[in-house]
Length: 236
Image 1 (tube, rainbow, N blue to C red):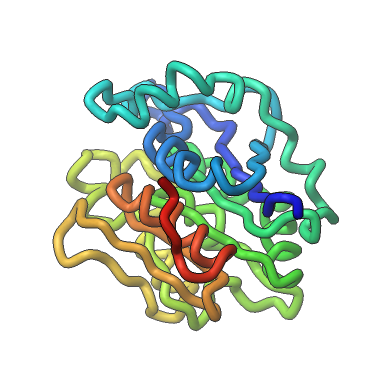
Image 2: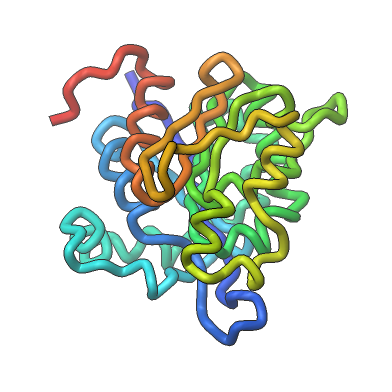
């Protein structure tokens, strides 16, 4: 029996608005779900532009042993990504699609029509759609074939306005993620009681999985695992 397949999507955007600072995808939000899923699934990595997807240098934390090991040994994963457009029409080859966070998705994936098409195809093929932190920016404007928002009427989470304010980047963002997720979900945005707390939200009959922040990344990976395999068993 072949392993289930998961498509991870990274941003191709590397500039943090007009701040002059670099951005990209966020290391633990790739590393932690990857560590959960890689032993049990076949993972393919894509990005809008293909090739090397930019790692946000501010996300490197050597005290995070899992992420540090990933950084040291898995470089090929983000330096040789496939073009996301090549996955149009291929949703049935996969079991899930997962959007890694970092501020980059706010600038490219939030408005990427090809990405929106892939998301629609995955969801309408009965597949799992997941994202963490700023990754839900890829979902916020995605619509289904009937014109409704993918997240409409569903509980959802993502990086909160309080957290964005705390890192001093509200003004650098093209839109406030929490506000737009709440609007397009019909007022169903959820978040942890305290900023930076772990929060994973599952909606749409278990097929829409979102995590709030970096602290939620491993739990998002575990939720994807559960959605694919059923009851979570030991991954050790």
